[in-house]
Structure formats: structure tokens, C-alpha cells
Image 1 (cartoon, helix red, strand yellow):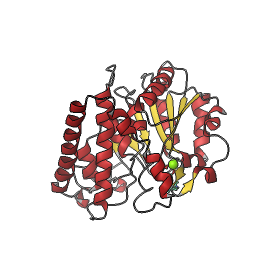
Image 2 (cartoon, helix red, strand yellow):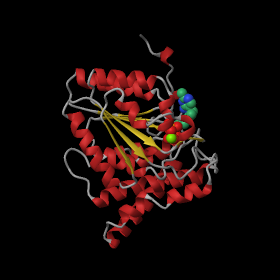
Image 3 (cartoon, rainbow, N blue to C red):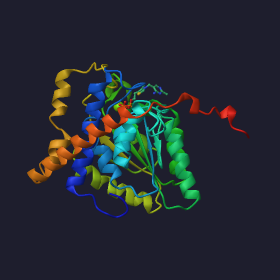
Length: 310
Ligand SMILES: Cc1ncc(C[n+]2csc(CCOP(=O)(O)OP(=O)(O)O)c2C)c(N)n1
Ligand SMILES: [Mg+2]
């Protein structure tokens, strides 16, 4: 789905299903103790990452947050390396040192400091613009991240300096356990527009609709017209992290009925769909198995910044 080739229906389905099955594997295996640290799954939000990142080109930068597995897989990251990272294995994305929230590979950067990623994204967009690379930055954040003041300093600079960045706000309607109506005043889109950042908004799980919105926004950013924002209203089906779900189960059920996967699956030839499903099941099983067989990261191989000669 890179550099000009248009993503087809099957590929969009496959990418969403890879995220779904991987994340289901993470949630069901967590209590067995195979992972280190914590995790935040993306189940239910897959259409956002897949639709938006279908518009990226080689060398574009993607900045993600604590809920990064879906963004990473949609970016083209290795499922095996991600599984290995969660298990603290030497073959993990960062050699087993970063864990679930600190995944960095090529031009993909995830960080668990809520809001701290946004000045980084804007700084990287400034670098791309200054170096005239033509590359753009995709910066994902959640609704709760709008409670971090540094986000607004960053939006101001991005707009003032007309930087090549697309802000993707995923409103899954909760910040940890706090519903959006209890943590956010006013409208989300107004927060971007008050910095003169044009904002498109959709309450949908249709990957095609998201892809089309993203294509339009990305084209404007690539044309050098400054930042854009996408506000995507979505829902996570799983807990915030693991076992910490305080939402009304009926509300969760209601949103589960508008699932991005069956919606996209209906557009496929049934035989093809089944083939993709079998292939993805196999890919996920192999990724977890290989990662479990890999060696643990060796703490002796860690280098302290103090050990590095100036
Ligand atoms: C600076 C900072 N404060 C608090 C936290 C703890 N924390 C992790 S996720 C989260 C809520 C995030 O909500 P949102 O931005 O809506 O993202 P979502 O989890 O819904 O994807 C909080 C408060 C953190 N990681 N960093
Ligand atoms: Mg949220």
C-alpha cells in the first residue's frame, strides 16, 4: 500500500484483521505471564489506522502513542517483532527493551507519555520542511490527550509555521475510565480550528470512508498547505489496558454492533475472504510461537548513555 499503489478491499480487510487477531491474542494470553509490562489494545479502532496509513508514502513519519500496536502493524511493522517486543525477546522491535508502548522502527515512533508525542511530531515536521524532503508526519492521539497543555503549544507552532503534519485524533470516547463528556469541554474539532488547522470529522468505522477523508487531508498537507486534522469518532471494544473496564456492558455491546471488520468483509468475495482469514490466523499463530521460542534480551547488552564516550 505504499507509493502510489491503491489499497484494494482485500488488502484493507487483511490489515484490519491482522490487527484484530493479534490484539485478541495479546489480551487472551496476557494473564499467562508471557508478556512484560503492560498493554493497550486497539480492537474496534482498526479502521482508523488502516484507512489513514494507507495514504502514507515511504519515508513519511508516523508518531503514535501508548495504544500503538494497530498503528505499527498498519505502518508495515513485523507482527513477529511486535510479539517478541512484548515478550522482552532480543528479536523484538527494539530488542525487547521498549515493550508495548515504546515501539520504534524506521520512521515509526511510539511513546507512552500522553501528549509528549505531539511536540515530537511537530518538531519532526519542522525538520522535514526545513530539509525540503517532501515527507509528511502523521500524529495519532486520543481524546484524553487533549487534556495535555503541550498539545496546544504544538498546534500553534504547526499552524504558524505551516508544517507538514496530519493530526489524527481518535475519539474512542474514553480517557482510561473517564468518559469524554466528563473530561472535555466544547467540540474536539474547534480545538484544532481555533489554531486555523482545517479539520475533517467522521463518526464511522468504515475503512473506505476514513481512507477517502485521509486522502483528501494528506493531499493538502503534501501540497505544502500546512497542517490538517482528522477527528475520528470510534470505540474500543476491549478494556483500556487489561481487566480495567468500568463501562456499561450494554454500551459496549451497542458499539460492537458497528464493527469495522464485518462491514469490510461484506465487500469481498466469500472464498477470498476465507483465504485471507486462514492466512491471518496462521500469521498470528506463527508470530506468537516464533517470538516465544526466541531468546530473551540480554540485560548485559544494554548500554547506559554514561558508557558512551563523548
Ligand atoms: C503524561 C501522562 N499522564 C498520564 C498517563 C496515563 N495514561 C495512559 S493512557 C491514558 C488515557 C489516554 O486517553 P486517550 O488519550 O483518550 O487515549 P486512549 O487510551 O483512549 O486511546 C492515561 C491518563 C500517561 N501515560 N502519561
Ligand atoms: Mg480515548
